[in-house]
Amino acid sequence: MASGNRRNTVFAVKQRASKGPRKKRTRSQPRQYTITDLERALDRVEAAERRVASDHTSQQLHSRAGLERAWHELNEIESDLRARGVLE
Image (cartoon, rainbow, N blue to C red; front, side, top):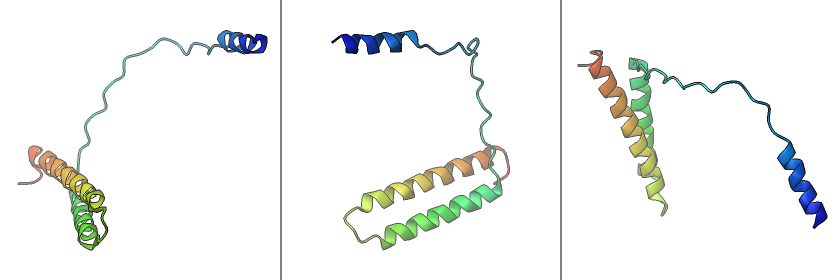
């Protein structure tokens, strides 16, 4: 038991040196998508659709999740480009 108590005191004594005052985090600017990003997202959706079509296992929900993720990203990019007037 004495050795167990000794270990606890060693850990209690070791403390990290302070790193300085804490600062507020600044939010980064939202990503500005380009037409290239839109084309890549379209390619990802097509690839995900091919994976779903060729998946003949009992784990089809996994490939559907990838397709839904790709759709979501494509919609986000399209809406950003429309809001900025890049797409009609």
